[in-house]
Length: 416
Image (cartoon, rainbow, N blue to C red; front, side):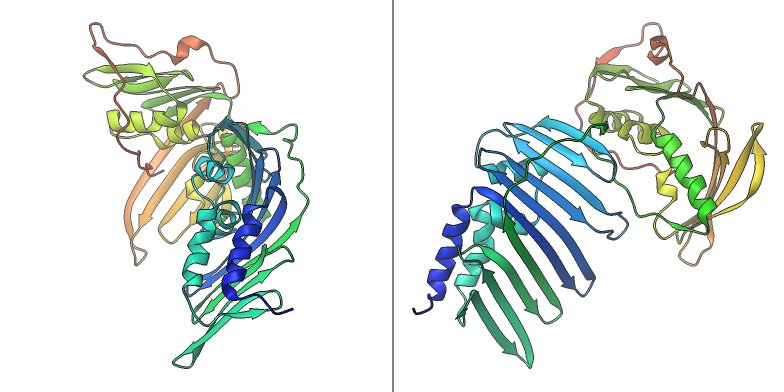
């Protein structure tokens, strides 16, 4: 039997994927450029009843740690699990339209290999320009095209299974290479394990710094756990500002300005007026920043539920414990951080594992000191219930109360 023409093979690929409504695909992606190599692994499950599950496994890349997240879209609900952080979330998602497009819209985008498997538009992005090229050769299990320019060779190869589905895409050009490897099998059921922490957004974990020894690692990770798991506290900051934390409730005051959020309603007080209204937690930082001009970095961490002062430990930093000293009557480990752009020194309580003082020094390109800041933190009522009365702002007599402004920009991070 003669081999099909390239045009017939391209048509076969589209028909096979358009008909694929049930089963699983495991995809390994490797992208090599002059900037380095990035890799990822995905698993896509179609249950045949209108549900789709996507698992993303990405090794450590750049400043970010490894990722292992699974997303399930079914009946207008997106459910997700972060296996590395032990977190889960659930939110409404599009319920009308093609399943693949709904998943892409719910996630804000997916890898091109996933879009290829799920949507005709994703396949057309690759197959349409390939069809227009000449020089294709039909091989036993797909198509191949080889070219040579100025003594440099290029290869494009499409590997197919017996039904016409793509099992491999290989694009090799001078200085770059893209490889997809795809294996198919039966779909698996998705279930959320017990004991996961429910969150609004997954925690982004940067790659850890270089710890000088196990003690440095234990002290820093203990501090991050204590801050990240904080349920309630009153924090006096630099002897001037105060932060109250209690579950979903957050209040911050510095002089005559501040804000209070009870999980549903946000109040912001400025020197001139007060603003009040319903707000999602995700919008609080932007509203406070555009109204008051800044957001305290500790309050920011509490609002987005990330460990306080995580930014002081980038992947290119070296971290040491250089001694033990007392601060505010508590024994502390003294942690030194050396990074290309800054140096820092932290006094971490041996009792609460929370930072009591932080000194940071910004460095120039040659390592010279540009500026130095010191922050002191006095913690009380840690993980103890706080009354609701502590989360109300005091308004001045006659002070105007206006509706919250519309969110007009994304608040930029404040230096630690």
